[in-house]
Image 1 (cartoon, rainbow, N blue to C red):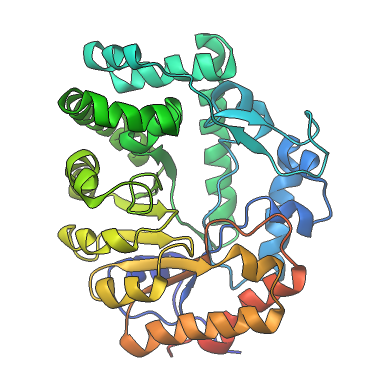
Image 2 (cartoon, rainbow, N blue to C red):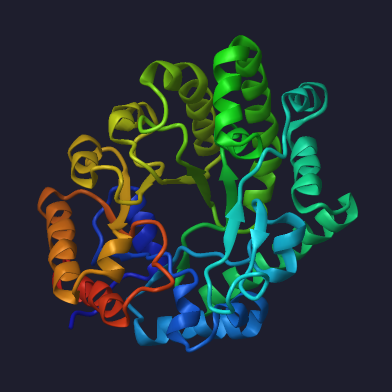
Length: 379
């Protein structure tokens, strides 16, 4: 077993900056699996904060090579989920089995007339309106939930740093306006807007992007961590044509990400879905200033070939490798992934493809972490 010569924070900063590291950054999104590992029901994990945090601690104590925490429970925890969660939430024990995974229910909470609220007021104002409608609650309850979520986020960061981990990000923007509208309106309705509203929708997207930047930048800086989660899936080539990507997504997304970078903020692009057709666009962003995180739907090795000299790439051990494969099959993929990046000198942040599933096999999770020592040391 090798010995670390860098701290967890030094390692992720170097990886993002495309500089040498002692070993690969290990940053799986542990999520609800932590509760299963600790012997909790998912209801306990989602409703008892101290038990949930102890479960995360237990995973780290068992696998201390996990040096970068890429999971934040704060926005989906029971005390805030029904006030300001990312969508209408169904939690374990609430119409679901106590050990079921939570669910986010998408429905048309936003109508076409609501774009006027964004044009006349702001995107932030409309997000509060959306949360009121989505959770069928009051503005006061939404604001109380957001305050509680911020308190829990600060606690998660403090616990992460206290055990010697780095925090992958201190703030979760959620989704960029194009993606957010597709959730608020529902996918079908929003894509109709894209075709039927044209330039009017472009105007709203541009204003929403600027509004989001104005509120997000100070909120990110307040956490003390200059890395931020930016989610995306429905703007990729799996869902829309490159023609529509170039019109409705990329101009504002490029401006949004570039502005964050200019403010010394590192966007961690958590991009689910297949972005293979869109990979070359990311070459237009500043080199060594962002992370592209992929979930196994995108061709990870094509991403390596295109972007290996331009940005750190995060991922991408798939859910199927954690759940239905054997430990040796997971190990085989991890070896291929890690050695591909090692041989080229590219910057890999070794992670799960999106979340480690709640039903991951414990022996496969062990194989995931074991691969860091087997294949991931550079010293």
